Length: 167
Image (tube, rainbow, N blue to C red; front, side, top):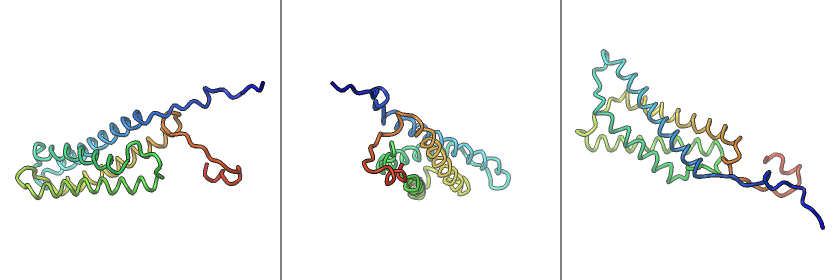
């Protein structure tokens, strides 16, 4: 009888996409809130030059943006984001965040009396949220790839010389 010397615990699949999705959603929301706070602080700092900004007038934009970004990321299958290279994910992040702010822009100018937005605040919020969401996702994928529950295991069939470029 031939015994298998390979330990089954070593090759146990521990991939947990639900945990990855929860972590990505939480960090997307936190990145969005941080971008909002920094943009609001920057605009409030410039109050003597550009006038006073009312937080109650821009606060709905944060909730609209969080919901729209979550829906667009879900639609683009960015949760958990498997099967995408870094370049493709970065392009999708730029298009999704841009689409979210385009939706806010359309909503704002359709119902001008509901949300009154400073253009400086809007542009800085857009830029900061794009940069922070892309940066945190890059960091999470980079650090998460070292964990066994983050990635889905794959098998590469073929000669080592041909497959080492893929690995």
